[in-house]
Picture (spheres, rainbow, N blue to C red):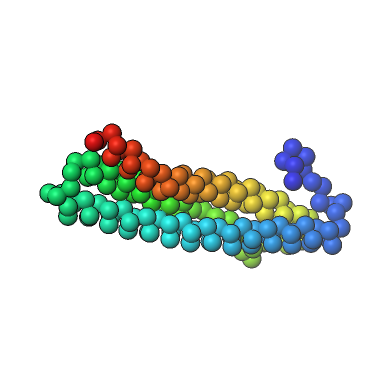
Amino acid sequence: MNESEPIDWSVVSPEMASLIHSQAEKHLTAQLTSALASDQRATTFASILASISAAVLAGCAALWETLEGASLAAGFTVSISLLVAAIFGAWAARPIDFFMPGARPEQFAECREQPLAQVLGQLSEIYQHDIDENEEFMAGNQKALRLGLVFALSSPILGIITWHFAT
């Protein structure tokens, strides 16, 4: 919906308003499903990488006396890079205000005397706002997860570079 031009819902048929509202509700439902799946991926990503980071760090600590300095530096670099990736994953899975489909019955108190097309149209406009806000949240979380993936995938390379320059 174009925000610069308000829609005159009085000229829209109830059937068309119902169709528009139904499609907006389906879109919000699909966004919710997608966001929940993304949160699951981000949570799994963060927990696995945090565990690997801790294991690498524990290995470096356990072998502190026997490893050469370059190997320790490489291990610490890999561990830190994986931890940063895990933090990005956790950020992507953080709780956010997410708009869901549906409305509370109390929201209809003031408009129950209005024509159905008008009410459905107003709800559709609210849904459009909610869809736009959800897309912004999801885009930000996707960016954080991608950054985490970059750190995770680059951690071995950073470790090798660190080892190379430390020798």
